[in-house]
Amino acid sequence: MAGMTSVLAVVLAGGLARRMGGGDKPLRMLGGQPLLNHVLARVGPQVAGVILNANGDAGRFAGYGLPVVADPVPDHPGPLAGILAGLDWAAAMRPEIADVLSVPGDCPFLPADLLARLRAARAAAGVPMACAASGGWTHPPVALWPVALRGELRAALLAGERKIDRWTARFGCASAEWPAEPFDPFFNANAPDDLAEAERLLSSGLAGPIGTASRTISGDLP
Image (cartoon, rainbow, N blue to C red):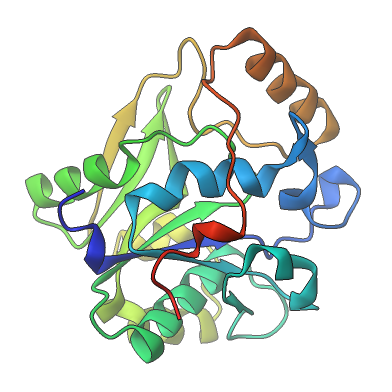
């Protein structure tokens, strides 16, 4: 994909998973594989490389062979902290990376044209960021972020900001819309009932093939 070499993906896997009963949502099983495998299989081919944002013992993700970066600010302030982790890692480790694509670790049906359409929406609107939308709802954690804004994001987090859309509104954020039928590509498995629905979508064939990501997904990352 043209331009993918300037984009890194960060999979947001640092949540507390309270509605799932605790633990790591991305490691819950779907179709015989962890949710994370599905996410990586769908987002990996679109970008130059992938990192994981997760807190605690990074060893639980060791089998993926991917860099694991913790929130750079304390007290689990939410997805903005994971996004900042991705921006900071890109700036320090991959200075050629201009943008970071953030995706939740519990969204197994992400579209294959996610990056392309976010970039197109951002360019058409002339703004620095773009997020996904479907069924009349925006999905702020599924977004494209310029590394150049990491200083502003850190300052906002340290000042207490927690809402993604409120922060992006300061600079401008376009949206790219996908249809929510016959299934929502941004369906997220927040609770056990959601996993059951995801299994139904997989078995019906509506959501496409089961992802096959493994430790080979790391691409050209060090």
